[in-house]
Length: 133
Image (cartoon, rainbow, N blue to C red):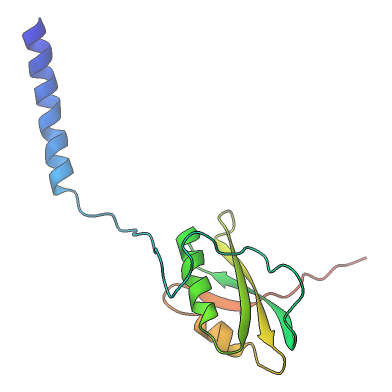
């Protein structure tokens, strides 16, 4: 009986080993440290007072799939000229990234939205929902 159990285990292990050796690599690779983004901490909300001469701007990005995408968007936004600070929050339920940026007064938000529209991402202005009374 013992030999039958060992033979059965060996027969089950052979196909599993074959699958393990022939299976292709995963198609999703974590983004890691991208564009200087801190892989540990990406702020979700900008806190405190805006820097002198800067205004708060809110945006939404369609297309992220994970928190790694948040790091990628954060690093990209920090490279845009005139950006004083950035916060990005990935909402896994809606598959959207919500962001805030402090933009220097007098600077257009279009360079930020253009920079954040790449690969699978599409950035747009976050317009407050209208409230009806």
